[in-house]
Amino acid sequence: MSIRVAIAQINPKLGDLPANLALYEEKIRQGIKEQAEFLLFPELSLTGYFLRDTVPSVALTMKSAEMRKLKQLSRQLPFVAGLVEESADHRFFNSAIYFEDGEVRHVHRKVYLPTYGMFDEQRYFARGDRIRTFDSKFGRMALLICEDLWHPSTIYLAALQGALAVLCPSASPLRGIVDAQVQDDNARYWEMINQAYAETYSLFMIYGNRCGFEDGVGFWGGSEIVDPFGQRIAKAKYYDEDFFVADVALESVRRKRTMSPLLRDEDIDLTINELMRIRERPRAPKVIQELKGTKVRKFKKPKAKRRKPRAPRRR
Amino acid sequence: MIQIPTNTTLLRELLTGFIRNEVHKTGLTRAVVGLSGGVDSALSAMLAAEALGAKNVLAILMPYKSSHSDSLAHAEMIVQKSGMESLLVDISAQIDAYFERFPDADSRRRGNKMARERMTILYDHSARWNGLVLGTSNKTELLLGYGTIYGDMASAINPLGDLYKTQVWALAEAIGVPDEIVAKVPSADLWVGQTDEGELGFTYREVDRLLYLMVDQRYTRPELLAAGFAEHFVDDVAQRIMATQFKRRLPVIAKVSQRTIDRDFRYSRDWGK
Image 1 (cartoon, rainbow over the protein chains, first blue to last red):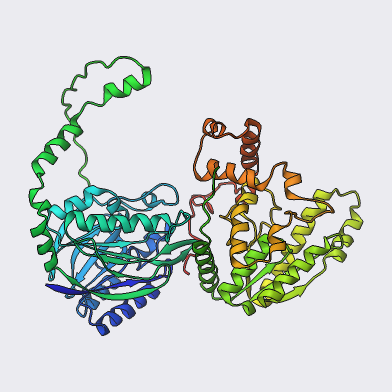
Image 2 (cartoon, rainbow over the protein chains, first blue to last red):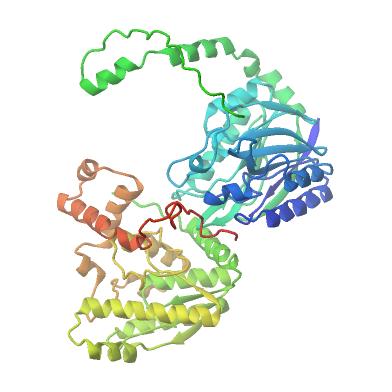
């Protein structure tokens, strides 16, 4: 089936939920007007990105009034929102939520929280611990947030669970301006992986990035959709606000997978066996060798210790 | 030869976008900039004129009686060329009035005082004219600490702070800053005959290459020496960066409470905007 997918490349106000909720409403109305069937918003676009200590004050629980409002809006048009989600035990997640027909259909909590260079996400957010696909009324999809996709295991897991399209809300900043390149280095890398993933895993990459500046950091926009053949079928402007609607012909996944049945041939057992071996490889002797420059001693597997009973963790 | 990447097309788009976004989100539409006649302030002002419209930029020319006559002429050239608003405030009287009380002040004190006097004028007109004060310090100066804290280093937003001097030259040339301004010997013009490179003891082209590898590319000391830089040069620059770190930070606050500003009270500056 074919879906008319819209991407809202917006510039939210940092830490201003009411203003951004109004912006969401406006874009949903625009989507409806342009006959979109599905709308993708960027990462943390309901709150802004460099939230720092405002994280707890803009966090939404499943019972928040704003959450009810978002559910209600999805009756008119299904969409993915990027927001701070607070769990019942008061952990804060950088989450993307798929709303459809007045309900929350899927929550993805960002797994890979960049904490290096200009990024500080692990200081403020708890880490997600699962990669799952979900069945939307259009077909099976996966939601992965920005840095998640810089770890190839995430898209591998999504593809093996049958995703026909990967939705990627992003807040990717411009950094590294390089000579003779049309775009900055971050944009170049994203465009390369979107194309490579789409073709490698025979699926649609639907990438929604934000624009605007926060404390001098510019987000480069350039949202795009790449089809399973690696063709860029829609592209938003760089740097500025934009909104586009494009037809995503999910049936072309079938065509591509018929021609190159790479996923069919994927040997999951081999991967699992090798991963198990890698995980269990004794590491201690190597560290000792590096520290002392001595020969590797034979590694003895430690006897299984009896774990002390821990207080059950509240969830 | 090490080349610092300078994609002027992208830089121009990014920096005008930055000025427009950061000014507009404060609810203002205007900018105020001190125009010295040098390449940094010329570039900053022209980027602002492009971003906000020339009529939304107020250039303030603040010569002292010993300033080189070219400085004022070059500043006026930028005003003419871009069509921005301008104001001439000669600072000689106020500087001289102050130093009558402290006649033994050396040229460093006098230079710093002039830079801070200019800052107070910019901020006064920022309030009068509803414009944000635009910074003109480049990355080379900021890293070397070659500027006056709370003087020319003060601003509300700075489009040039992540550009090395050599990148400033390239971008200035690309956006049409007149050749005589781009090509002249860089000088803070705080006393007669002062030149930046004379005072620093090395050229901008040399130090920019070193800073680019040291700071941006994270070369270690042995790697820098292997790349051909002299030991004393590497060490001198590293020492300068460390010694001037205070100029790049807010004042140190003694921690007393659970939440101390900028330590565990952390918010972006664009909070709520």
